[in-house]
Structure formats: structure tokens, C-alpha cells
Image 1: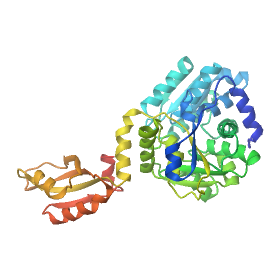
Image 2 (image 1 turned 90 degrees about the vertical axis):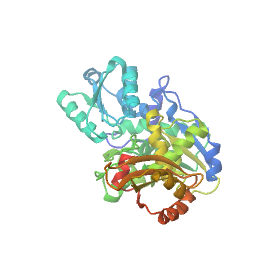
Image 3 (image 1 turned 45 degrees about the vertical axis):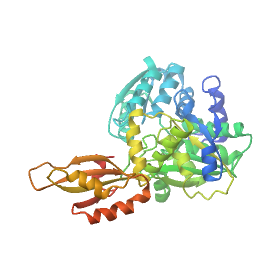
Length: 417
């Protein structure tokens, strides 16, 4: 492998190193998505690995390439959770000690999985608020100790390992699909996909799906190189990367796949569909690719499309937020500031005069309690159907209360969503 540019042969070599360690993940046709989007949709179930994501591939390939001296010194990495699990798994398999830096936003479930997979070989350090903060701390530690830094995505060996996903897809499908949709954070999986396909199946359309709140690869393409995003929405924690890698950018910039930005609320809708209809527990980044099918991708009807379901490390405690974001995105959940007269029956009259038969109050909280004639309250309303909103707004205009709608981009939303 060259120091800068992985090639398809490197992907083949990586796959050979996995034999007996990392089994191929299933490729499953999804009837719900196929019917909904008039496509032939297949899911590459990377969530079913031991580490519940594709990250073990790149980590194992990199670590198995280390010299004896580098193995003895140990390794260090930063992760939003999945890369740390991949490194922990690989280190336990190869007997290498590791220090794993995780940001404070990493779900508890992912922290516990890193510890479980790594066992005695892994020490966890919680540092910073974002992945990039943790990465900076990991780099400082590597420079101070001589331990080998294991990048989450920006290394040719990591890219080659991730490229084994699409290699398996074609072997399992028996032919090249019309399109592959790849979730994008730092770009390792996308770059690995492009490395393999450009030599073997350049006719395949590759679509990179980024979170709307962290479009770091699209921003890099627009600026001609990796740049820091001004703001990152951390909700899609497995793909919320402020800056893509130098190696990953070089591959993606040369190939120029289609990049799409997927709204976080739409991802939540798909996560719930995956869970309730398909029995699949996907993390936000894992649902990126299948969510992107709802966007205008320019695919012909009936085209065979493979969506890489990249991970299933979702903390069950997050589902309340996921449901909330989904309802807001679908237009079924709305918030209002309402001034209520401080007298008995005020809330009952509001309910009778404003709500429809299928609508419900889901939040009622006084913003400030006092002894004045009126008191403002934050009111959350869940509609039976999105189209009920017009009627509610008309009825609100007819009541004597002073009512102000809270838009989703208001800072106040951070207190309820």
C-alpha cells in the first residue's frame, strides 16, 4: 500500500486478514423501503457485527499492519463510540494495549461496549464535548508517549478496511447494484467504497449521505479541501464530524460522488420505521443511508440500491428524543407560549376552544409563576394529523389568550427537544 492512496488490491488484502475474525455482514432486501420508493432496496447490515458497526474492519486492518515494536508501545484513538469499539475489539483480538478517548456526548451504551470489548487491553478516557476535542487530546497523548495513533477514518489502512463492505455487497448480491448509498462522517467508509468500485465497477452510482447538521464532506468539496465546520449538530453522533480527513477527502474529491444532506428529524422518522416495521435497532448514523432514499436522488424506478446500515449502537434512553424529533419533523408536534388568566378553569376553556378531537396536550409548564393577572405557559400540542394545524391556528386566533408559536429554529426548542 502506498503511504497516501489505497487501491483495490489493499481492500482485497484487508479482507483476507479478517478471515476467521470478522465475518461478512448480511445483505437483506427490504420490502418496506422497496415498495415505498419504487426501488429494489437492500440493506447491508453492518449493525450485526460483534462491534455493531463497520468500524472493526478499518481498525483491525490498521492494527494488523503494525510492527512488533509498535504493538509493544500500544495504540491510542479518539472516537464518538463506534471507532472506539472497533479498536477495542481489534486490540483484544491481537493482544495490543489501547487508550481510547471519548467525548462526553458519547452515549453510555457505547462507553460500556468499548470497555466490554476491550477488556484488560483498553483504558477509557472521557475528554471534551465533541469528537474533535477527544481527537485533539488523543493526538497530544500519542505524541507524548510514542503510542501509535489509530485514526477513526483518515488513514489509507483504515480506508482499505472499510472498503471491504462494498466488496462483500457485490459478492453477496452476485452483481453490481445500480447505486450504493453510504453514510458519511469523516469519509472513511465513503472513500473505501470509492476505492473498490472505481477499479471494479465504476458504473455504480455512489451517493454519500451526510447529516444536515454536519455536512463536513460537502463543505470540504466546496472549499477545495478539508475545513472546520462553524457548527456541528451532535445528534447524529456517529457522523457528526467537524472536519473530514486529508486522505478521505483526496479520494472523494477525485471521484466526486453525489452528496446529500439529510435532516435529523427525517432520520428519526426512519429510525422509528426501522424499529417498528423491520425490527432493526439503528443508531442515527446507521439510518442515514436509508433515510436518504426519501430525497431526490435521481434514481430510476426499479433500480437496485444498496444502503449501508452502518451501525446499531443506539442508547435506548435516546428514544424519547428520537420520537420527539420525528413528530416535529412530520409536523405533528408544535409548541406555543400562551398567556393564561390566573383563574380556575382557564386551561379547561383553552382545551375546549382550541384542541380538535384527535389532538392532545403533551406539555404544560408555566414559564414564570407569579401573582399577576396573567401567567405565561409553554404548551406542547401533538396533532392527530399534520393537516390539523391550520384549524388549530384559526381557533387560537379566535380566543382571548395571547399566543405565540415557538418555531423549531428557536433557542427555546433546545429545552424541549
